[in-house]
Length: 187
Image 1 (cartoon, rainbow, N blue to C red):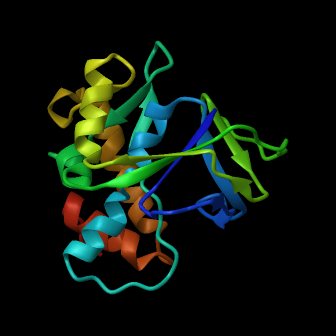
Image 2: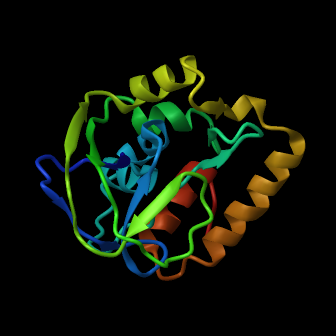
């Protein structure tokens, strides 16, 4: 089984969409717990909550990596990021049984993509993404690196990277708005 998360209900066939890779794809994971982080996009959520009008494609925020055991590790790049992004957010985890081979290179553990529509085999409603993420952590399926646990080296890397992201996001005003608000950046 391959899993895909969405806030859209009632999907019968998943369709490729253009995302950060600039190619129409559908992203999946072989592990259900790995798609929980996609139930909410911190950038889109923050912009909507602050009344920032935007009508283009949303930049995706992927605050995760993989720990030494190969488990997905959610990383809080700013205080309370986990709660801010996921608390009270509902969504759906769609399961598909098979995927057609796709030659798009992807260097994410347990991930897969499709460049053609894929029929949905299962659909699970997730009433609260935060609760689902915390349950996966309790079960040892994912780990969470909370903001207050960040090492000084990680904090330095984070500051440099966020500043670079901000400078390079000239074509994404929604991303810059998010970075300005969450990281207290000025243009």
